Amino acid sequence: TGRVAPADGQAADWRAWLEGDPWAGQEAALIRDMDSPDRAAQRRAMVALGHVGGDAARAALRAYVDRERRNNPYPPFENHNRTDSFTFDDASPLNPRTLQSAVRALGHLHDTQSLPLFREILTDHIHPREGNLFLAEAVVEALGWIGGPEAEALLVDTFSRLGRYEDYVGWY
Image (spheres, rainbow, N blue to C red):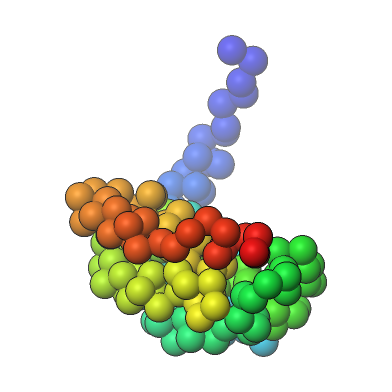
């Protein structure tokens, strides 16, 4: 096969490390990084938690999303003030990816406890002149990863309340 088996000592070292439950400490460190003043570090922590997080990560991510969901840095979407043509560096408070990363991480973690929060977000944020469409987009994506009848019902309900296509793209 071309693979080299690790020396018995290396395998024993890895087993000992894994038996020491390093994940709880790693998860706690990533949760702390969510409060970093460096927005790029926050986002990296959220993405990592979406891959390796457990219950503590789910709770921390839900709390972050709940706390930040009303902070929409964009003006109301009217006529041709297209926010989708803007680019922002990682440190910019106008960069929507940090909050989106937290929402997507909840989806990757199949966090069904976030469904009531996601319902509120979609109620508040699917209207182009009032909401944060970047946030709503991430919630819809996360619901697909969570799956199940409750997430599906929320998606169907949300799609039934969407306005005309033109309202979302500014063709008027």
